[in-house]
Length: 113
Length: 111
Image (cartoon, rainbow over all chains, first blue to last red):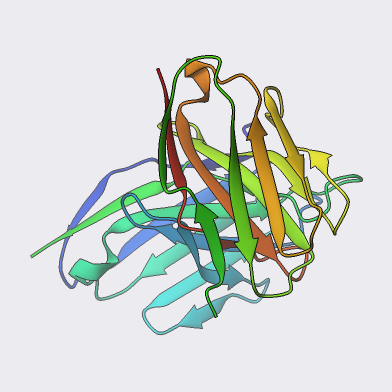
């Protein structure tokens, strides 16, 4: 299994649709999980952290399933401005890996009018 | 508060030339990182630093050197550029050991 694996997409959805992205990770010792957003030719930006109990920020909901080593991101009522690549990110656990994050290759979302 | 800045934004080098990329952060972060991003490869960690005067290798360190002489600056050097180093380079910093904040990137082409 790859360290962090995501469906590359692209996901093409109409405005107002609900879309879900999934991500799996290989190291059961990982403790921190994030979703980053990257617009075309821009830097990645933190979208939200993912907590064990699940968390919501407006139209965005993140879920973590430690048993299955699975992370998800749900976007409700998609907007044109949500079009971007979404990166699943997991901390690299283990000695000598201070602060290291492992980035998935990203899932591209395109929201159409 | 500028966050993380990178210079230059763009650069074209010939094979064998050298250059230094500068990253600066004004958030008083201890941790700083250099990544490269290539199509289909995602972000890969080149080197990182957990504090002033310290550096460590990441996933793809070969062909690069780094220095962290001041807490706010992290320099990435290419001693002898190769076409395989054509990429977008991102610097990031973090206060805690997890959430990272990125600079706008440097687009480097080596011909």
